[in-house]
Amino acid sequence: MNPLRRVVFLSALAAAVSFPPEGRADVGDCHSGIPCYLQSDYSLTPPTLGCQYRFTRFSGPDQPVFQFHLVDVFGAPMPDWIVELEVVAADGSVACQCAGMPSAVSDAGGNGEIPLGFVGGKGEFDLVVHGTKVGTTEIYEIGYLFGFQFTSVDQNATCDPVEPFSTILDIGVWAQGMPPFPYVRTSDFNCDGTVNVIDFGSIGSGMSRGCTP
Image 1: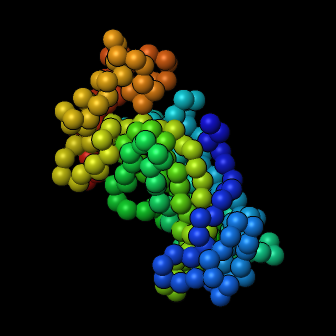
Image 2: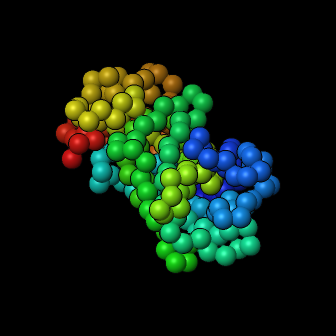
Image 3: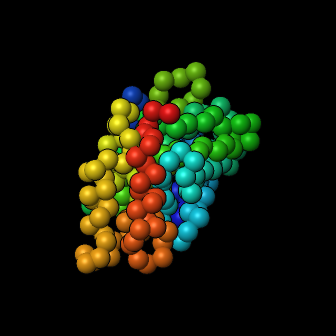
């Protein structure tokens, strides 16, 4: 898994609010006045350890930052676009976000950064990039990144604002990766190939804090 990726696919250029004049966009199409996903650059800073992103508390070991450079079909920068990130669980995974989609506004050069924040769940997540021109209401899908492996102290992906990240249910899910059970990557918080008391210390840190600061 390469955590540093460019946009490679656009599922639909426009959200339910509006479509471009030509209708739904196919891969390979770009439309004037909207960031061109084929020429724009998107990336997520890599995890501190190789096996996966690890989301413990808000000050946890991995605090990935999404970086973007928006340009139009002619390569000109696209300033004043509100960019939002939606975390989507891949097949067989679970994922949630604490406070909705994080966002930032592109600067004069079309650039910006968005701290991803806490992602609950485990397995693999994808990122859908939404864009809205400042002063308008149309929301467009302007990019799609996929295949980011991760784990978190909120193993069952509730992101419940009234409970800690880690409850007895989360610890139960995590424990399924301990011996004598087969090794499970999402239980291995220090990426050393084993699941033991050190990893329990990581998931235990989620018992003191949840989505509400």
